[in-house]
Image (cartoon, rainbow, N blue to C red; front, top):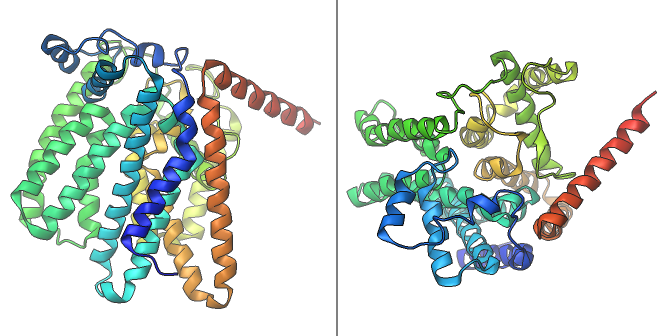
Length: 428
């Protein structure tokens, strides 16, 4: 199976539109954050004074001025037309998928020296990673829920920043470095999770096999690190404005419990990537602060330890540890190592930018399987198409869950009822 770059890009755009076109008929989720994050006074006025407020105020303990400014621009031209807001989200997601494709392709070219020999493999692995990122059901929350556009915005500029950094590594142009810094600033303006950017730049250095003994490699990170320190302080101040976060006085879970939550969340995200069933819009903690952790949660640290020991040789293979470290860099802040003011122990949208790491591992080892058992190539390709079809259809259907307040609550009620019935069946 041979593909060229233009065909791959066409497939990406087509499948994004096919999977997510129902969101253009969705409404505002006014009972679930859209009522204050999107519909507010900042959105309704495009003036220099209001822009100044957008970039200087902490709104409800959050600081995402670039995302809010984009809401204001959309409202200026279209008013509170949900179609315009959803179309904006679909456009952002499609651009993000294309950037994932190009970044994976560029990294593979850096690692596979004989590009002419591995050209088709590079395109197929890059396309496989991008398509899984495009149509996986876990991405629906980030794309179909307007308030989650913060994740799409920060991811867009974050990925653009990585792209410019790769260009800087390759060509050494200072303009690429400056564009990278600008993208980092805009990414943080979308969502505070962008503070992982300098760690990701070191990941890119590892992926490109750069020499860490080179002083220039460390010097070029200093402006990014200084910006990160500033952005971290801004994030802590914005959280403290509503008395949450590290500078707030909010009651938090003990550190040992948070470590268990970290193990649980990591396992839960991996399982949901591989088996995307019973997806909810809220996954509550198993108990409130001050209560005892349920005993069954303690199995997760043990499970991860056993998996690490038993599969160590597999985990240290270059494609695996590169994918896993990308995943951990971008999900790490949401794994409860630091206390978070969130009602969810996990959330589908948190995995958005982290997921390409796992998708890359899947795409890479699918190609390994094809090369190892070429006699069964048609079988493997057929299974891959069937899985992609399943994911795309499930994503298409799940977009209807986010149609309006009523549909979201009905879906949640149905799934909770199913869980209750299963729990009754397991009782002795």
